[in-house]
Length: 393
Length: 181
Image (cartoon, rainbow over all chains, first blue to last red; front, side, top):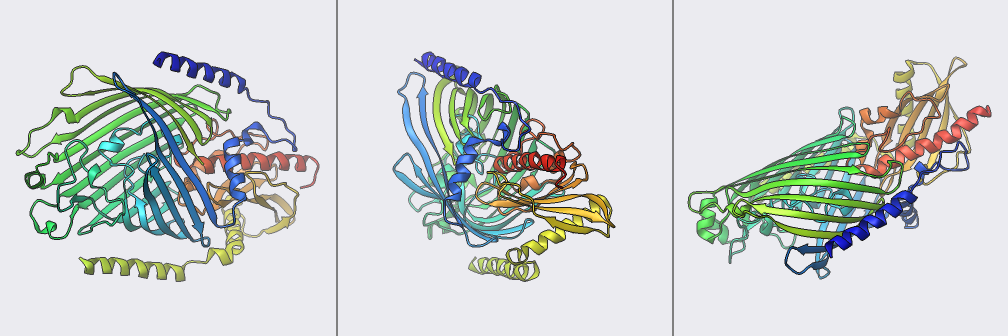
């Protein structure tokens, strides 16, 4: 069945791809060149012009099909996010994203006020994204290849990672630098009943997401992005602090751990070619006490990296893009463990993903890929076939 | 800990107040600010101190990517120097202003983003990236992803500025041929 689906997909692409022949550019003032006619944006911008001034409406969503080898497929409206923004004046804006996960769970993904003093300095406060890696900030389905987000951006960086905080951001155009610096609330490591962090996905279970959060420690986060070389963008991010535990519990030794994380990322594109890579490393302190108290198996060091390269098979002047890509991921949530737990080799994972992202219009994508996953304790890799549609407007 | 939090909050509050008083209020003095920027750029690009800036109303029809434009002739002691054009173009949820300086033959000598209002996508203001528009003849077509490189995280603004420059020069070329400018 898989092969049949792939055949139908390739057929669709070839028919559409061929029909996308660019028209010659005419030097006629009454006719826009085809380069100027970008339908996706046209629609987005036309829609916006109909909305009362100051209000922004947008959103993104993805509907996915995952079929692990020898298991039933899962079909899911993974997330549907509605964005509302309001501009009070040129300097003060409010941005919020309301997320529906798996149809039935509602979250607020972002809700902050931005006060723009100058391009060099913006102050913001509220529920914001932690700037770490690429996908945590740029997570709209049309901005990354692959049906699922990279696994590192799930197990190492717990995307979508957001907390309540306050901070500053800005750009220095002369040297092509963007900076972000924030104070955030941290992870919840103990809710008074049990520990929230575990070996398989480290911090993921501890995200408080701004919902009746507990705070006993302030965490700092920052990122520098350099885009001074055309086509290239590189980033370095850092995070440091301590988790929180609920009242009373936080007096008990081992309830809180120290968290330090550092990340490097790069994106490059040249004509039809694109590549991206990310490396993230985190180290936790007091995991021996934490594991003793909670009977958890949290590692003391975790890391992960991925390399991805893509190629657009359609002419650059086409509004559609068909990107074939390959991604290799290697990550370990038990890179290092304290002596009171044993290292689990199954937590050192390696994944290959091969697939296509077919951008029907800017803002609308159909994705298909196959993933081959293995661990250090498993000799034969297991596979998963994925398909999905994504939109961003 | 609440003491620490209080001080952090106070620090930010003082910062906000100080900067609000110190910096110019863009919404009130926007056109003044833009004119000041144009003059500054002309001085650096054409190495001129004494020049006249004359606004000329041209019927450049707005397009999806060119929301509005203002056209200026630059003259120095009755000698024609070139042109300055300020364009308003859309970003994802707002609009931004950029400046184009050309010589007498409509060859772009400088491109600069004057006002960008969004947090994301502002990377188009990068000096190096904007230099891709400089020193081509007026009939050059800029193609996103081909002779204009993409910027990760600024896709919409990159499309917007590239398309609006193409649109602008489609008209300016014809007006120049007709001798209207």
